[in-house]
Image (cartoon, rainbow over all chains, first blue to last red; front, side, top):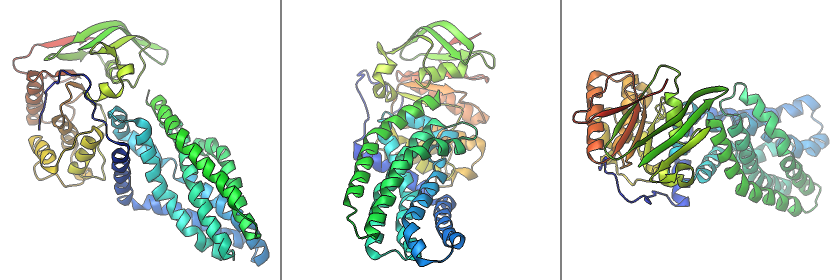
Length: 239
Length: 204
């Protein structure tokens, strides 16, 4: 333990490698999520409930259910992911750990990316895993189920990443939870269109590859730009 | 090493201070004084780069802290009003993550030694939420013992601390200054570091 030793050289930066920093942040957030499991479960239960309410509301005709399955699952996934957005930065903001993260001699964009990925693992990934079960409830064909998984796997990270920008912008605002949904939902429309489109195409026997490629492109685009934008938004919220 | 020139700080419409200039070199201790609302915390947060100064420059080793960014952050520790520790984690985990983010490869032995020095023997693996307010503050302060950042910026470090811990803080600050470190702090309690002249800066 060395303390108080001022080094004369000014170029000492304790930067971690990209992988090390990502794994550190993701591990931290996963441990925190595991010690507050109720938060994780609410998102998943909300998703299951919303999807299950539709057959009760519109009636049990198999043809109609099959037709609207893709849209229902996607809209429910979209709403469920909005539900958990408020939690992405607010706890860290309130206890001051976010402040300290911004003072860490590391890239804030990478740090943010780690937090978003961890958030997706606890709020997006369970939806992806649960979706095929719910698809069966709507009598979706097997091929469409696989496309549904693939589309959600590409689409839900985009929802988390776009949501992170909104969550960072509304940090510390009263009523930020509602505001973030209003900000983020319109931006998620492309994901919804291509995601539901892919599953519908597969269900009607067409090739879903074009929609999936577009979802993949959205994912890459979000991966490149949103961490940086979120980092800047956090800096603004900190002032 | 730290030079502040003509600094002005505005909060909302309200001008907190202007034309503030001072410098701090190795081994110096600076106390920021002022009534509630005079801008002590705002000054410290500006020094951390959270707030943009309305006017003036903050230089670290001759370069603007905005340009240095991560290089500057590697050389400073800020301790704010918030403890920046997670209630769900224990003291050991909290400190390990903080050290990891600061880029230090520390093993558990070092972290435990730091916690024990702060008087938290036997509390290392308890969830922080069962600790008292003063003990949480000690966990937060243990961060100062990890790593070797020369500049400490402490905002009310003594809140919730008992007499023993205040003595310990004086000792730690003394050691840090003797090793060529610098400390800027605010406090409403007396803090006397043996053998060091405290410079005072009044905000009004």
